[in-house]
Length: 580
Image (tube, rainbow, N blue to C red; front, side, top):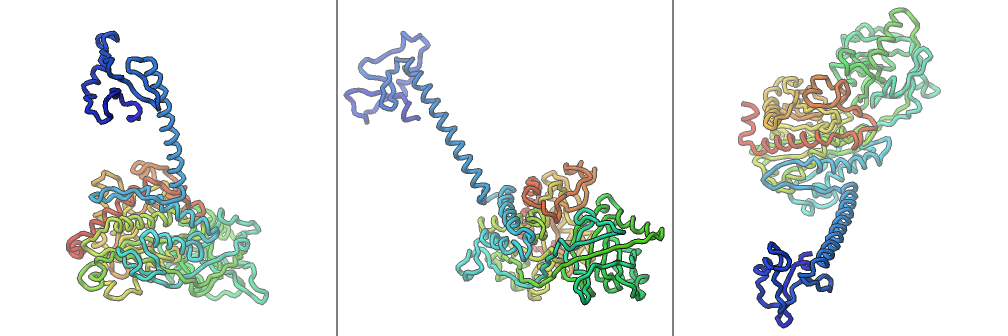
């Protein structure tokens, strides 16, 4: 437009390269303070503008205004149409491709939109395997391939052919795979069918009903035993220990204190043929029916393991106390098989050799990459894994060489009972294990009704790990305090992949935005959201898709994770800091 409309002088006998003082002439062109009649016109030169081959003298104002107005309309139209085309292209690109925005090298800021781009990929993967999600039988391998390609490695190539920033390996092991014939699931009480997924839920890895000479059969429960405590110790079952030969027995056990597998194994060992675990009823979030997993094949016997609400169990108990007949029928057909899977381990290459001697401490940052069979597992735990992935990608893009060694890990089979992280901790060399200074764990960082949770070291099940884990906790506290962001402490009870590290004498810390627990009114004041609603209403359900993610939570928590990692990675005398 400057070329088309810039006023210029066209002396008829002068070369185009003549030296013309256009700045001095501009004052004459537009200084009409004395009126149009006083504008000097130099008859020896044809002053004007050329527009697409048309010449307009400067003194012909009406034509000049019309041409400028028409050209402006055309220019604005062109810009508007171009903008719409570019915007449409951008939206399409954003939907189907992951693009990354970068900040200056002087600033380490994790962009939430980059993490969201990764999560869209995981969402697509998970939804491509209906009924299996991102389990080992479903989309786990595809999820792993996406992580590998994003970090510049191909496991089928030789090490020297891959990107040189990371030393990469897969750590293979076997885990349990679980399939259920959902049409077989039955729980009937006094002739009334309870509705699966509404009145009761199946705990993952529950076994099939027993068989007889005719095959699987419906269990007709003739003895219902309410375990008085939480079913975490043998003494809780002493009253049910006497032999009983009149038919199948059902043990009803309270939720809490220990994991579901422990309750089931004690129950089967003491004569149960089926188990129902009911919610505790000691808080608003411990009332309803719930989901869960046994974490793998149960020892000491097999049989259905169901979960019911607190009210359902109390109704049964009242009938029993009133000596009203309690007739319960159960049936379940399931299959548990062994299936191979693998952890993904990325070591920063520049410090890898030193980390394998006794001279350089290692910071392990990990998140589980698998999900449950229902849904795409985008919050649990795509959110933690993709935040870890984006931090690793930034390390690689910026070629960060920290003072301490950094190892990025993506765990398999967490939903089967922390199998991947436990396999890692127990199958690396003794020297490599000793060199691990700490573990950072990020599990569920994008809950829709989120809190900003820091693992509370004081609640560690391993007493010796409380003090060093508190030093990690303090770094997260400092980050949130510096940015004037509210936070709260969440239980550090071993429910996620930091558990095997604590068991091995390795301090840990991390973040979490909440699962099935209900947000309190006080938490609503601190974090916003909805009181008396779950932090994640889609926890372990098919609705855990990309629509279940809070982008603000992703932005805030992934930045806290990246900042604390970088601080620990560059900390002088890290062991002294943790254990002084």
